[in-house]
Length: 125
Image (cartoon, rainbow, N blue to C red; front, side, top):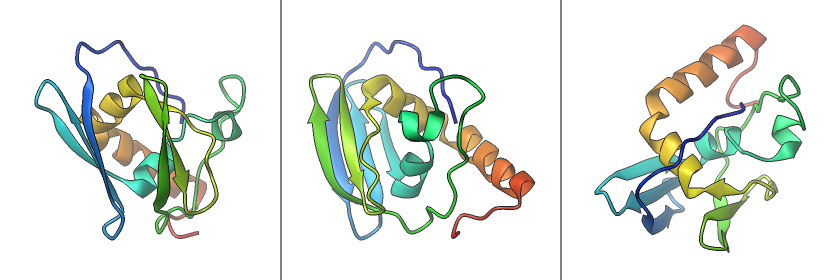
């Protein structure tokens, strides 16, 4: 799903990967902390592999319920590139994207679940 991000006036201060619960905990200097499931991050990957190269080319990500993160690679001073347990590792998650994914979690996750249902697909493949 292609997401539009806006500039943020805060910085990421901490990233904690909870491998057992498959949660990425991220904190910003404005006091916001978000607990993002690895599955959620995986289905909202910003990679061209998932989004295509133009609007309308997006590929609905399915069967990601049990995905985790093996490693998190820093990308300069602006983002991270998680290495997911399903082998996906081409998405760059900027601080702005992570903040949007955290602050808009309920609406984005609900929209994704509706897309799955409409497509006759499921989270577990």
